[in-house]
Image 1 (tube, protein in one colour):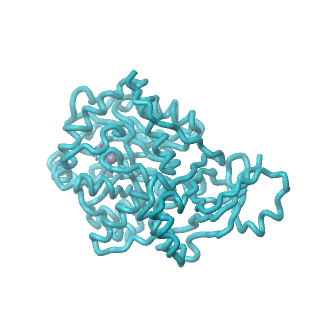
Image 2 (image 1 turned 135 degrees about the horizontal axis):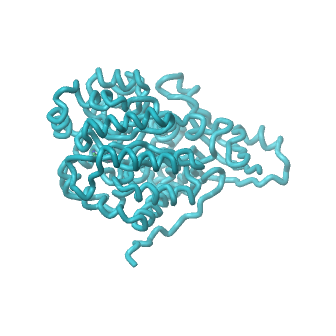
Image 3 (image 1 turned 45 degrees about the vertical axis):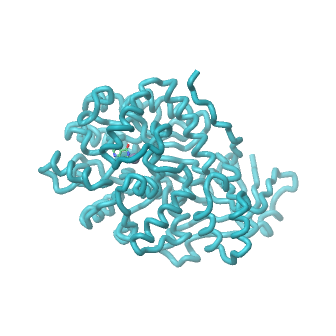
Length: 439
Ligand code: GUN
Ligand code: ZN
């Protein structure tokens, strides 16, 4: 079945920092995207493509907006949705005081489903169509998440947290039970329709070496499964890792020693990395999720994007809800821009929209599947509305170039500017998302 969308259209073909800018993207002021059975068939100029089409084909014309690939959130915690904006602490105290008690509730499958439904509706309202998602230690939290994601036909990656020490008893698994529960979830969900599994040790301090080794064993047993964890986010955390693993040569080496690095390994934050760690991440094709709103909220530090790019590390953007303060990738870009300003660096509009789309897809090893409009890609896309707020509409009147438009979209934009989200070519109807689940 063919579906055709017409409108202003932008997508990336390569990293704008790595090839001449004009080769890094395709832009059509009046473009057309032809979708066949949910996959992109072709994009191009309306004047060229419309002539080839049967005049009875279903055509949707979006005016005064920008069609882009759906955003990709490479690090987020769905169970932390209801504890977003918890006051006053940095990472380790924030985990103890707020996060762990909240995560306890996810032993209950129905609670997980209720929060997953709300969370995924928030993502879709923000134009995010794929995310790499933490569950909790409970197997039921992942069953609940995937059940809802499957109903919505979304490409989502999730995993059960592994955590066998330095955490409350009510959130603790063991090396063996974590291994078995993860295995059962992989067998049940990995590559079920659009769903994929991530082996998810919370971070080095909450896993024994035995548990990390078992995570490495699972990765080897199931090629194609992801590894998702946190790395070098906060200085006190890094000092703690040093104490817990004195025999290892730094934080990343703890993971490396358990064979957790690789093309489908995603490390959130990496705010305080040494050059040798960057080199190792690059050599193993591991990725970093840059989470600026979280890094600023928890006072973790200013991610060194230049360093990561200089080493050719795959980088995506992450909201890191509930330490992050927004679901919106537009707002996340805004925070990322300011983070780089504080480092005396510039995050260009092309680079930031690349990171939110194709860069995220590359970080997740899903290039060709999501993140741009190459032939055969899954047609998950958004329509961004320049007129959604009076301020942006006014500002856009004084805007000459695509660079300026993108910059303004990201500095003034948020969920209000996501006019529509599409999954496999189908427009998603907005949900009221106001069920508090208290009945
Ligand atoms: N490090 C270990 N667990 C977490 C978490 O839940 N959020 C963040 N931001 N960092 C972590
Ligand atoms: Zn996180």
